[in-house]
Image 1 (tube, rainbow, N blue to C red):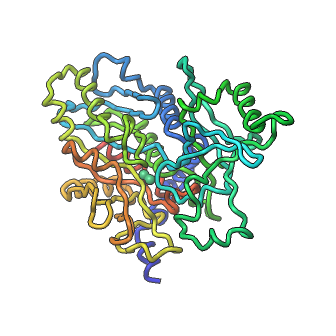
Image 2 (image 1 turned 90 degrees about the horizontal axis):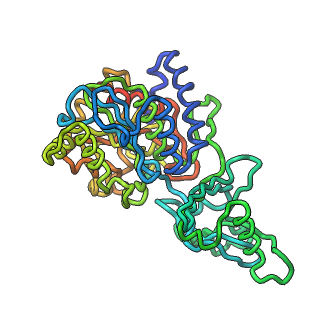
Image 3 (image 1 turned 30 degrees about the vertical axis):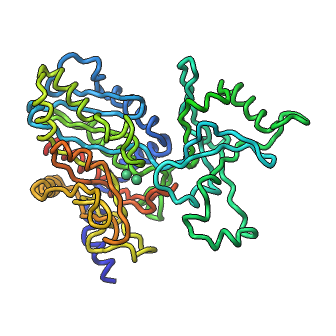
Length: 461
Ligand code: MN
Ligand code: MN
């Protein structure tokens, strides 16, 4: 088929030598372990921060003066993290920034989640990000997050990841009684208010009112020190309870939850660990809240980037406002986020001359947006020309990408929130199958090419 010939033209597996292929499989072992272990923005921040320290990065807030070659790390509110390698050139010349997001679609507990009905105890949820609700029923779920007590004590929760541990689930309606449901539109077949998590079914004692709920509260108190009111100051998230898996007879892919966008976060993190004495300051930024519009004080619509730049300049002894503006405007950025891989089960939504294919390397997406490039950054060709050269010179296998056919849909990334400073920015990341599903699939070759792309950008662009 002509289509398949197109896909093969730039296949990364065919353009790597045996040593590179071995490195690809090796690199992905670490990636798979990371995916199995890190499922929330808080866990990602902790993982990156601690590993940065172990690799010789110093906390930015403990450093008084900035100098070339320094490796620094910061975390903010437990949900944002950045690694920096200070360059030879002054900050006024701009930085090379790779920004990815570490939040993923999931189910969040409501502020008053626990109730009892029909002999069961359940948690009410409000989903986070763009999900297809039917994908979240009848699968094992794990509970991750924090509960903050009134005295400020923070209780960390991660239940359901180990095989011998309890897990949670949302029961689906049996087909025998689903005649009406099956006739509904997919988007309406399962309602947000029916995404209630099964958490218990055993009453505390005979004749005790709401005995099942009471029994659960007893367990929460004795095992975790949590009272019912404590849920009002908590961030608890339900995520798929299974680990990442290798996919395919050839082990060429990885299937896991949360690869949008932890594939870009992990690969850019590994890349900056290896950046040494770059010309321009290299920054790897991991942000929260992308999936709900980059809102809040941990999303990229906040002033995170400006605040980091201000702190760097302050510690470099530069104190004027103009320098902050100039440093930002002179910067280059990769918006490290995923794109959709052409799916042979749904060829009708892709325009194959411009969409990305699994295994064809890191995807350079000039514009995202929907129906007329709305909300898109639309990268400048002068910048893209230089990025193409960088990738080709550094043996980065790359491809172009566009999110589906023009009239079908679309989506945005954080690129626009970096572009507003005047910095040059383009979307650049892996192509996924099943994006936003509880089990997204990526090509190991693309994972490796992301790492190479980010490393070349931070080290030598
Ligand atoms: Mn994303
Ligand atoms: Mn997404």
